[in-house]
Length: 450
Image (spheres, helix red, strand yellow):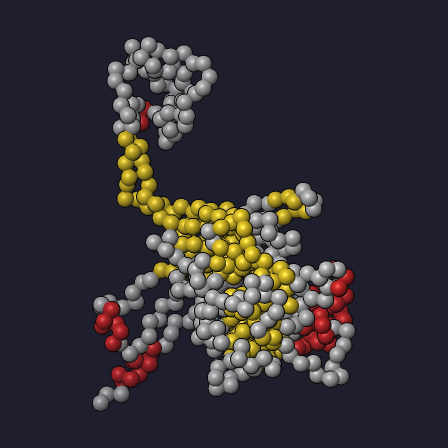
């Protein structure tokens, strides 16, 4: 056999280098152009299929993207599946639509400004070709439906559109209510109806009137519509929303409470977790994050500022004041310091895709927990251990209270989280016990490994 064929296959199998582009805002920016704060992206979320991407910004806008599929090679799908080299094209997303989700508000009872910044976005189950998602700022959650709608056009006007002014309307948007001079056959002599200045009615008025005809064209337009608004249910800022696998309910969490909602009922929610003590001076911990189990609709987990994760089974009682499992790392004797409780606070938790593991992020580490083993984490990943000697300085400038998010890859073999200096870290956590770590820089030169 000719060995050259294997070399050609190896060349063909080489993937195209992935091009990273760091962006905090959308759109091209000229050199030296100042970035407006309202344009900075504040939330991002893929749907379960990976075909749609939603982003929210500080200006309260939500922008949707969809994945584009292009064939790299000629031939039908059956022939392509038989080939021994992978598809070399990386996924590409194109702009789909955008809409204003939230507006700035003011709470007059508390004299508090509520900014429009989108904190969280969660995709819901799609139906009949329509997309559904939840978005929230600090106080108000909204349920959005984005669907395609055929464009309707009006034709068979009484006035020739070519004689009207440019692309403006042939007639005004509504019938005027003020007294205007009319002709005997009902024609209006007023010229403030959007017609060109040189237009005039024929002598004696229009001989015959026709009803305009509404035609539905084949042109499609994306229409975002707010279906529900869930408001006035949280006294404190919302830190988490999570939709349930049953497709009917979701939870929202603030510092002291977790509420259960039905997607179709916006004026009522059920308080399922309440950690508020009778005397606020006795408060020892707050809720920092909450998430539903990806497959079991009766299970959810929430984390606290004391470094613990509680697994709740909603089948046990209506008020989930007791947990079914508690995940907490035991403190090493003699290691306690002034900063121990502060850096133990968990800022984010995520379930793995299969629901077997929970990933948590505190100030210094990532921890991977097995829900069947509550004695301690199965893996601990040091994110920025070099900062430990500087905890005193970080406390002085309040940086020690910064919050970081975390995520798992779809196959569960990688975990990632952010750090300082535009860096984010990716750790391996495969079943073989891989502990490889990669540090990447989120900048205009992101492929530079640190």
